[in-house]
Image (cartoon, rainbow, N blue to C red; front, side, top):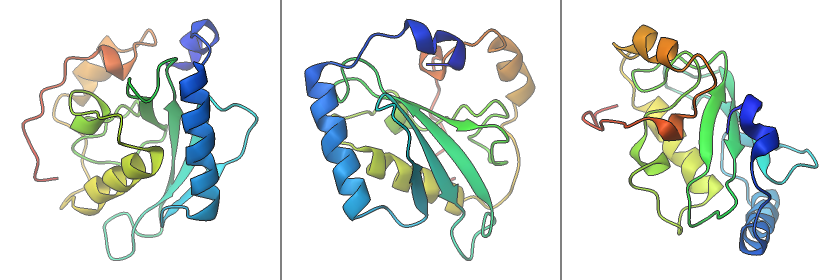
Length: 161
């Protein structure tokens, strides 16, 4: 959900609440390396600090992910975006939207926030160049009115970065 639609989203189901409580407890005991959950009282929206991995183009850089959980998580994928400024990467748009198949078509209820974070860090770490997607300007212009990245029909054609 985008900030503008956050107020209209449905409350989490009991299953989603239980799952998120479990994930949050696990995160507190064993957080994924390079990530820090910013504690709030909102279980439905997590803000996560991402630290670029040592030895990569993003070493020493810090970004923030916003994870919004739908009513039926984990049966439905959360919406995950970078809070601008987003890192320069061929699969990350300047509005923070991330083109990563596990966030959309390849989502599985077995995935967790930790596994999403590790996948995003891996994607960042494998990038040979800091650059925006070729269609960044067009895509961002089409998303101006708070469109969710989950409304996009992504084309996953490049698994090199």
